[in-house]
Image (cartoon, rainbow, N blue to C red; front, side, top):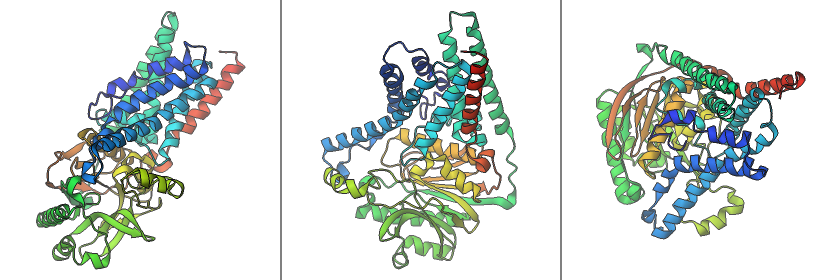
Length: 493
């Protein structure tokens, strides 16, 4: 399962890779419940999340921050191990619940187990730390399957994958019986139905019109982290983004998007006057979406500012999902002093409010900064309040190319789920233009300075997911309980 996400993109494996997990909990081979329902699922979860997230070790070396080489290696592997265990805990919890449902009749067991999996992922995605949803194993390779996300979000894809694996596991368990072929046929039928439903959604025309068109410019600044906050980095950032803005303005774009914290300054009125990028806005009169730092209650925010052609800041979005330890200290009141002593990393940003609305001269937009991309509900909420296109700003320079590919895959999922065009501006790649069908219309190279102008379209459609959220998980739970009651009444085991 760990090989299924981008950039390996071996997405078909996901439809069978959870069979051992199902078999382990349905037909325990060990008398100890701790081993069968806790340990074995934990091992599966560690393997999946550990392999999928191995790119986290790419933060090493941190010597450019003054961290000794060996300490940097320790930080990288500690971080990777921590996020792996956090992700694996979802599988552990799912396995623990199997103590109560693994002996049920196959139908309610399948429904309940699938609902529990979706519920656990929903719980984790409501936390501050999440990335490896089962659904992201299908991105970007299985665009048809990902369109199921328009129905009830990523849990629609999660449920389909888990159900197919569960049916195949049942067939394996009963492989010596004549009835073994029925779960196989059901699994094949479910997979085909899911793909056909997704293909139907995928095949619908976008019907974009000229009066909703926006020509958006993207600047990929390519400022390495090693110099980003040094004087050379400030100079290169100002020069690269100012020059790029002027070139894109000359091409007739309606707006320019720059990456997360592209300008290493605090965006206040006194500071703006001395920034060449701001003066370029006044001279050219083209809207800019500026990734930089803001202030809130005497603290700093990681923000995206909407600045119109007159240089007026008409709206701002403060990043909600901050990176633990990298941007903030969890339980800072209690752990702050300890972590400050143990870690040389600066982590003192404050998060934005969840009910933010990002206004632009062209209407409302859906804003996301870096880690926000992993949280589907964040994008659904903004689409439900009138967001007409997605602006995603990121700085992935800390990580290896695998992470950049996965980040792009997550934004691609968000574009499909809410049926919106997405514009991605990153510091070192991968910047992109993605249409509502998840098709990448343009993709930048990695570690290059790039300018790109492209046309997107404002949209006001509402998918079922945008309108009703995740309605599938409670439905599966209710169906599972109902089928359990019915099978008990009629005496089926």
